Image 1: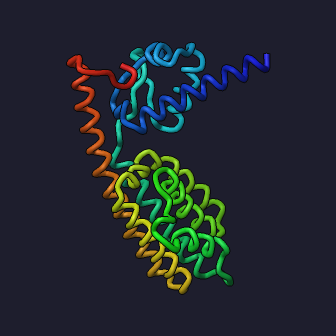
Image 2: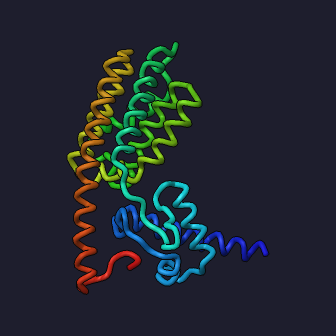
Image 3: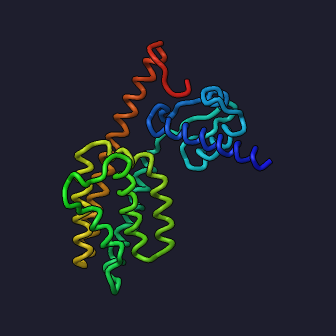
Amino acid sequence: MATNGKRKESMADRVYEALKDDIFEFRLIPGDKFSEGDVGTRLNASRTPVREALYRLQREGYVEVLFRSGWQVKPFDFQQVEELYDLRITLERAAMHKICALPEEPQTIRTLIAIWNPDHPSERAVGSTVRALDESFHCDLVAAAGNREMTRIHREITDRLRIIRRLDFTRDDRVDATYVEHSQILEALRAGQATDAADRLTRHIRASQKAVREITMERIREAAEAHRRVAEGEGEVGVR
């Protein structure tokens, strides 16, 4: 019984990862519709793990169930994204002031300075590594402020924005800007300049927000064109 349960869980995880990757890589674009049978056939999975994976993706906000007509990749709600970015900035600005008010500089600041001030450009992270480091940078700064509820809420916002924030590191200029801007934020914090740190942080996040919106729209247009070609018999995409 335990072995069967473990096997089922592993299959559900595999389906979940495959679908999430399709969504993240725009093989499935916002608004795309599909059935559990489509997914099961493509991934050679039975109905139960497919459904478990889809419910998990639904809880995370990536897909939604349609009444009597299967599932759909949840359309991007750019108004909601704007509101999440506003809330994120509010929390991170507050964290800057809290950090500067601490009696001693947190070890977190020294650790982050070492990461974001490499001795040589060749030592910079690339690809998914820099993406993960960027997320940790912002989460670690909020955590360093010492407010657990602030940290929890910020982590939830980070999880919800991950699908588009990751696109900020698909361009070299954005990676370069991230290293420079993170370093400047940390310098301001080390100097105890809370307002300057908060203002630099705000500009940094807004620049990233603008970039990911532009890249997201471009990727959706490219994927829609690829889907159009598939519909005309020129190839194969996603779960269609």
